[in-house]
Structures are given as C-alpha cells and as structure tokens.
Image (tube, rainbow, N blue to C red):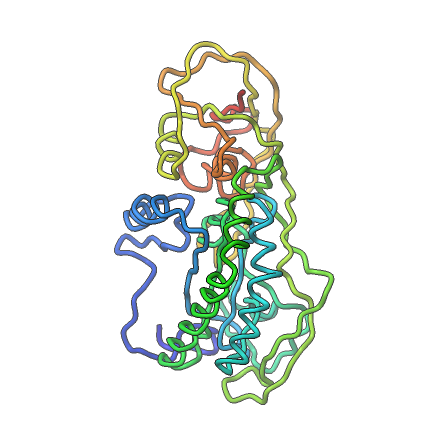
Length: 372
C-alpha cells in the first residue's frame, strides 16, 4: 500500500505489491483456525502437515508506530494453551542471540514487536495518529487469537518466529533486513541443533489445562523503545522506557477432556487441522453445556471480525443418544490444544467465531459434548 504515515500504514515502495487478501477477500493471516481459503488449506495439507517443521519463520512488513527498529519480532501468544517450553526457548535463548548478532554483524537494530498504546487507539478508531503526542501508556503487541499464524502454531507445541520488518524502510533495505534476520535465526538453529530438537520433542504432549480466552497485561519489567521525537520519519532519535503489554494471561482455562463428540461438519473441519476423528454411536454419558448468557463485545480492528463471542455456559453430566453422523475427536495428541480451542463453547476463536455452528440461544444446549 502507498505510504500514509498519518494513518500509520503503507510502505516505501515498490509500486506494486502482493496482498494477503485473496480474490475472495479472505485475509490469509486471519484464516488459520477457519481455513476458509484454498490457499490456507493447501499450505496446511501439503506443506506444514507433511514437513512438520521444528521452526517456522513467518515474515511480514509491519504498519504502525514510528520507531527506530529495522526489524521487530514476536513469538506465539497462546502461552497458556500450547506448551510453554518452545515459547520460553524462543524468548530467553534464541532471540537475545539473534538480536545481538543483527547489531554486531549487520548494524541493524531489532526489538520486540509492538505499537505505542496511543497509536493503537488511533488505529482502532480509524483516525490519524498524532506524532507529537506523548507516549507514556505502553508498548503493546497484537492479540492472542489463534486465527493469526504465529498463535496458531503456538498451539502445535513447536518453535515459531514472527518477523515484522519496518515498512517505513525502503524496499531494498527491507529485503536486506529480513534476509539478515532469517540468516541469524537459522545460524542459531544450525549451531544448537540438539537444543532445538530436544525442546520440540519434549513438548509433544498437550498440557492438561488449556486456556481458550485471555486477557492482556503488562510484564513487571519495563521495556526501552528506540523511537523518534516527534514520531515522524525525520524526528530526532529518542528512547522511552514504558510498560510492555505482551503478557497474556488465561482467563478461561479448561481441564482438557479426553475427547469431544462433534457434529459431522465440525469433524470434517477438525480433520483439515490433521486431527483424527472416529465413529461413535449409541447412548453415552457426556458433559453437556447449556447457554446461560451470550453477549457480544467489539473486537479490535486487527482481528478483522465484526464481533467476538462471549458465551457463558453451565456444564452437567447427562446421558445422550449420539446422532448418527457424529464423530469423536481425542485430545491426547500434539494438536490437542487445537481441538480444545475449537470445540470449547467459551472459546474466543472456536466453532462459533469461525462460522461452523450458529450461536445457540439462551437455555439451549451447545452441540459439542465432552466425553471420555
């Protein structure tokens, strides 16, 4: 997109760029849970699910706040859903080494992805940002929802690195910066192969408790951000030390059930995520959720969703006759967190959010059951 700095979007060349929105209008980086696009289904079935990479590097150019980092980066936010060990490994082991190498070897400044809270507020309100306003509220990353690629891969218990190159660099500089960052990340992997393989191998089993809804808080430690004053491309170099909003806390945390009984269309969807389903029949004792409340709340612009479901339920044990076309999906596998995040009624990126079932009314039963 053409540079539009007041709206904190666009980039400096080239004139023609590709898009992540396909011809049907699906944003491919919001399609990981829904898999509505052919492109996403092919990516998963023919690349990711075949290769099962230990590390995925996802490269972007970022819109947003003016700062002095040639590259910003992030790791999965689904830290209370997928296994935390791969995420901690990236934060504490990999990225400090990569960041230091970028500065020493390539003279590139890099840091954690985010935007100033004041700028995020302007973006969400679709108004121009004020480059002269003070930035004291914090540095904030993007949401936790697994519709984003990095967060989705966090559910799979593997290593992931999101790169957000500064879009206000020239195209040539963006290419050089991205190349250098990938080079240093792969250099780390090449020189620490046993550590990489060990953390992934030790994290295959899903966790026993899985968050399906989060709140965002600041870390206790402040972060120092290299920016400019005023926040324009030719503003004077400056730094600010502010709160860092990237601490995702699970607010709805589920004791992972052994399995779910799901309708046929949901089973088909789970199979696309490489979750195996199996026939189930007869009468069974299951856990059934009854809706006690259903509200909506406005989603952030970055989610590209009109609303975010807020479903409240009560659970009870009951005996139910299993519908003829229903299937069972087990959760004791490396993708168990994906099954839980999709199948739980209170999930903020589950079957309701992704259009697989119609939101049930007050007092109605949720059509997915927990089972043994």
